[in-house]
Length: 270
DNA sequence: AATTGATACAACCGCAGCGAA
DNA sequence: CTTCGCTGCGGTTGTATCAAT
Image (cartoon, rainbow, N blue to C red; front, side, top):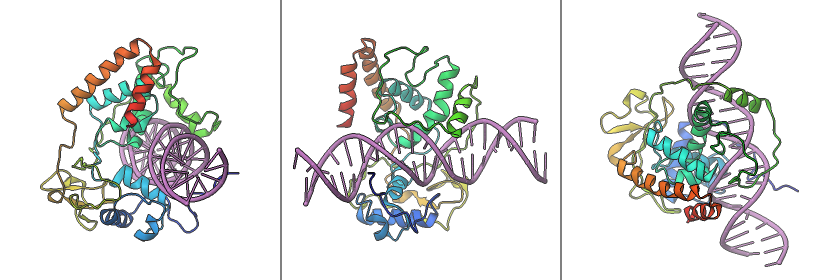
């Protein structure tokens, strides 16, 4: 049983991506578009698994990714959407322009779970104060992965912490443009110039007409003039729209109509 | 200054869904 | 209808960085 691994792991790079790998991947996708992940690494000259390339692109290199701290509006939206959709991170991410499912998942696990618990919500997974029998779950597939390891125990221990410790983080580099990249399409209108030898200074962030791609000294600068610079942050209007949409859903939720909720969730997939 | 623990997030893993053959 | 391969998703792990001691 068991499928063959997505690719032979022999001789492939793993772990953090280097600026050179990022450049190779970006340039290849600029030229050939997304997709065909399996064959992409070879064609792009990367010693990476296709899956790894896809992940790197989707979560980090895509030009429409917005980096930077989650805003309070986004924060609230994530909580509301999670209460409706559960751990369907990709659906939630789909409603937060520029945010990736991985980012939202991480944010949920590192910030929101703790915060909800500190607010007395003992089960952030269901947003309930007390565990209730027969609670509905929007669980996807896996059911019995009994991987209780030290990490998990550690995480559980963390969740007992009474209050979130507030930390101030430097803003992560921001990618401007929300143009969706059509699959297998070229980047003609989305040219990115990456020069790893330039601007290795986080202080460059947001200054002049250039901004960082990536963090700290690992990545180069992108010339802002080469990009379609659109609002890096959803406008208040956008968020208000989303709020309205979900307030309506909350009304539905009040009626505890799971069928409707599920159909809504399905509609998001369209 | 060194060590230890906590935190954040990038990256990996394995499985399910889906379409093509 | 079945099989196979690719892609996408969510859970989990690894590790760099920061804070506390």
